[in-house]
Amino acid sequence: MPSNPLILSLFFSCIFFVSSSSATTTTDLSSFRLRRNGNRMIKDLNLHPSHGANIFKSNARSFDDELKVSELGLAEKQLSFPFKVLGDSGASVSDLAQHAGYYRIQHTIDARMFYFFFESRRAKADPVVIWLTGGPGCSSELALFYENGPFKLTSNLSLVWNDYGWDKVSNIIFVDQPTGTGFSYSSSDRDLRKDETGVSNDLYNFLQAFFKAHPEYVNNDFYITGESYAGHYIPAFASRVNQGNKNKEGIRINFKGFAIGNGLTHPEIQYQAYTDYALDNNIISKSDYNRINQKIPACQRAIKQCGTTGTSTCQSAYSVCQRIFEDILSVTDNINYYDIRKKCEGSLCYDFSGVESFLGKSSVKSALGVPSDIDFVSCSDTVYRSMLNDWMRDLAVGIPPLLDQGIELLVYAGEHDLICNWLGNSRWVHAMSWSRQKYFVEASNMSFLVDGKEAGVLKNHGPLTFLKVHDAGHMVPMDQPKASLKMLELWTTGRLTPAKQGAVAPL
Image (cartoon, rainbow, N blue to C red; front, side):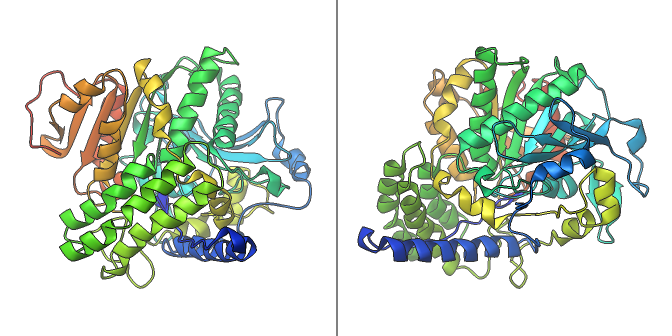
């Protein structure tokens, strides 16, 4: 969660509302604090985007001639970097179908969505996987270059093949969304998304255009993945794909499953888990625990008023509940809330500044087919603020119908993450009401083995799997790249949970 990837970026802002009689003052104060904390979130990742979002007042269609947009609304370019990618992958960039492109988003004023597509290094018949970074408002290029993409970005801004890139077992798409994130852009701020309906419709329409342009992948299994605030995006997007298939809206997508990594999905349950996780890991004292827990009932009431629709009451819930997390941080010694084993050095928890420098190069933008006037927005505080009413919504509510249709769900979490901790994720997964909930709850825990060693603990029944990953924080593919690749490979081939395996200690 502030995600974001990114997730990384998911840093919860703190907004304090006073009373309805001072609405104007409250709005001004809230706007100020949102901007301040959105900027703080970005600074904690050592990111310094030159724009709040790529919103141009001139008509974005002026770029269409330069981009050579097709009838499908896609402008796609084969990758051809002006330098050699270092290392040995068994293939070169030119050997693989690796593209970057734009999609002209339907039903918008002028929005364009940027994406990367990487053909599997193993087999073209491998599953198609889409990755969504969280934030909200952080670019998926953060994951691409620092987590699970085919390349790693070095300190001198060179690219080296990633031995554990997810493209080794899948055909993978990285998307900059919502509009205004990364290289995505529009000429109107009315194209900024405010809820999951807009986000999921944009992604579904993009998939339709992508598969029309690449019919050779239509029959491949399809999976949705991501982390952090994508814990909101992913369930909504999964439901949208399923709805499109049921209603025969276009190309039938061979949708098999969705995976959420260290996500924010069910705030009511996850916020209650903060103090328990913090106490269990000696982050706070018992007296701190008792004091902070007094704020939980007010948080619960506020979230119930917010409900699942994302009204203005959700801003109040955001304000009330955020105090729980802020109080925990206030008694820690500059802890890295993405990985409690570490401290934030200075004001920075991580240094991802290289991606801005790399993607800001004119030669790189040319190789990607990005118009010269478009700047890379690593994490957008503008997009972050526009999604505020969406934050406290329960997105787990739409998952049971998918499970009951046999669509797979994997929820995984690094055990050392505080902000989207494994405990809160485990609790909402166990509490979720679906036809086989009882059997999932009663299932035994099993070891997740990589090279014969336990890399995590998992629980499974039918299409639902929960996995706690050892020695990882918020960004599992960055902290445990080999384990995360093995996880994806086994899960997408139905081999993550062997039928017979010895039970292990409770999660």
